[in-house]
Each structure stands twice: as C-alpha cells, then as structure tokens.
Length: 340
Ligand SMILES: NC(=O)c1ccc[n+]([C@@H]2O[C@H](COP(=O)([O-])OP(=O)(O)OC[C@H]3O[C@@H](n4cnc5c(N)ncnc54)[C@H](OP(=O)(O)O)[C@@H]3O)[C@@H](O)[C@H]2O)c1
Image 1: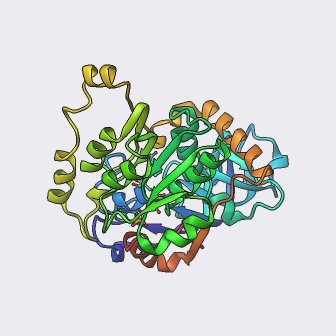
Image 2: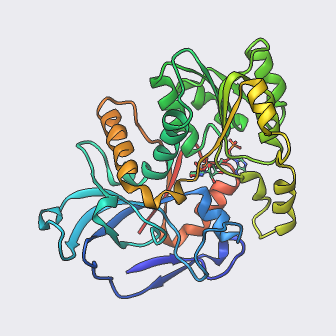
Image 3: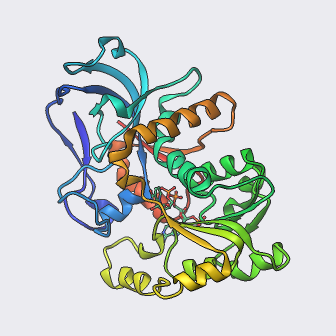
C-alpha cells in the first residue's frame, strides 16, 4: 500500500509518500480500497506538532476515506465485499488501503461518490454535534459560524438552514459570493472588520443564539459577549494557534493564554442566561453507537438533498504538501481531499 507519512513536525514539505505491504483485516474489520481521503485541519495541527492526540511520529494521519470494500476479517458478513462505502479511520486515513472496524463503515447511497463520502464524516458529524445535538438550534434563531467557507462551516450552514435558522458567517472576502449562494444571510470579513461589532449591528443589538467557533483564543471572549439571552457558544478548535507553516510553540501558547479562562464562571452563566460547550469528535471513539445514529440522520438528510459536501480540490498523494499549503493559505472553499 501507499501512505502519506508525517515523519517529523514541520512545514508541509515534511510529508512523505512511502510504500508498505497491504494490511489484512483483523476479526471484525473490513478492508477498504481507498479512492479519496479527507484532509482536516487537525492533520495540519498534527503536522505542526500542535495536536495533543497525535500518536508519536512518524505517523499517518487521516480520519476518513471513501472507497470500496475488498476484504473482510473473521466475523464480518462477506456480502460487504464489493460494496461502495465511506469510513471513519482513527488516524491512518492517508492510505490507499485501510482496515477499519465494521461499525465505522457506512454504505454509500446512490449518487454519493467516493469523494463525497470522504468529505462527510468529520465535517458533518462535527456540524451535527454543534448545531443539533449540543447547540439545539431552533427555527428563527440566529447562528454565527466562523470559518464559514471551510468544511465544517459549509456543513453547519446546510444544517442551520434545514433547521430554519438565520446564518451569519465569517470568512475571507474571496469566499463571500459562494457563501451567499448557499444561503449565508450575512457575511463578515474578519480580516478587515471586527466581527463582534458587525454581529451586533446585524442583529440590532440582540446578539445570536448559537456560535460555532474553532478559531479560539480571543474569539471565544468576543463570542461570549455577543450571545443573546439563552445563547450557546460551541467551542471546537483553536485554528488561531496555527500561525505560519512551521511549528511555533510560542504562537500556540499566545492563543492558549488569550482564552477566557476567567470569563465563563457560574455566576456569569446563570445571570446572563448563556451556555458554553465544547466539541471534540476525536474523543468520541467510545460512542460509536451514538455516532452511527447521527450518521443515519445525516444519510437521511443526504436523501433529502440537505447534506451536500462541497469538494473544493483533490490532490494526488504525491502532492499532499500542496494540499496542506492550500488549506493553510486559507484558499479552500469546502473540502480538500487526497487521491491515491
Ligand atoms: N473539535 C472537533 O471535533 C473538530 C472537528 C472538525 C474540525 N474542527 C476544527 O474546525 C476548524 C475547521 O476545520 P476544517 O477541517 O473544516 O478546516 P477548514 O474549515 O477548511 O479550515 C480552514 C479555514 O479556516 C480558516 N482559518 C481560520 N484561522 C486559520 C488559520 N490560523 N490558518 C488557516 N486557516 C484558518 C480559513 O478560512 P477563512 O480565512 O475563510 O476564515 C481556512 O480556509 C479547525 O479549527 C478544526 O481544527 C474541530
């Protein structure tokens, strides 16, 4: 098999293509021949040496793939063989063959390509947890989503519109036209405008009911301030810690230091009728039955045309470094994938 490895922390150029013998599925596993593998911001944080969950380097990252089952281990129904699927991988997704537990594999419905499949798990499960499971976004409410043009941002926008909510998005200006087209009602260019001020103008001083924030640091503080009564702040990342293409612990620590360590105290939450919650899909591997139920809901929304991943670019494995540059240069609108 061919895999993209991170041998050591550093710039995208550290990524290395290596070959190894094909793995055999263990009992309870299926082996998938991969046609597309998802790139996530977590992979970039991993490459920068800023991702606490990363197994020791050298490591193959990657949480999701689309492809076809070509073998099964003991105890798995052989009728899986030949089935078009997508799957969640606990690292190791940047490979042209993966072995995964049967419970982490999902059949691709008609019309869903391997690329669509590889673009769904992380972005849509995270968006589901934020918007529906924990965020409880209701009809007529307003959601603010940061990095609206990213994979999670687009997934969250689709779910918010399905729930009948109004969407305010922050994104680089070059993405605004596209985002308007998929139903983001108001756009803020966070590079030139203060999102706190703009959101209060847009909502005429009321604030928003739900915020999805993976920027982190100071952004959490501002978000808390612009929650309307009963508003919820969903925190799920710290992309502002990824400053530059090389590892910088100092920059990461600055982001950590600027977090609202004292602001979210019980009296403030009670008296202001505000909620804060955190999401880390990568810490839900012990909850696969719950994840499967969320995925069933998402697949039913696929059938209804609500869930529609936007694949921006597909890079060959040999150009994995270019894929990481592309995301870090903030150029992607939607999902970036690797193709063996
Ligand atoms: N906790 C979880 O379970 C979970 C799961 C999935 C993703 N996440 C987090 O959600 C965020 C979005 O993830 P994604 O995979 O969908 O990636 P993505 O949205 O494609 O992220 C890239 C986009 O983020 C924006 N951005 C903001 N700060 C950035 C920075 N310092 N460097 C580069 N880009 C920056 C840029 O868009 P604009 O310039 O247009 O804003 C960029 O295009 C990431 O922080 C990720 O770690 C968390």
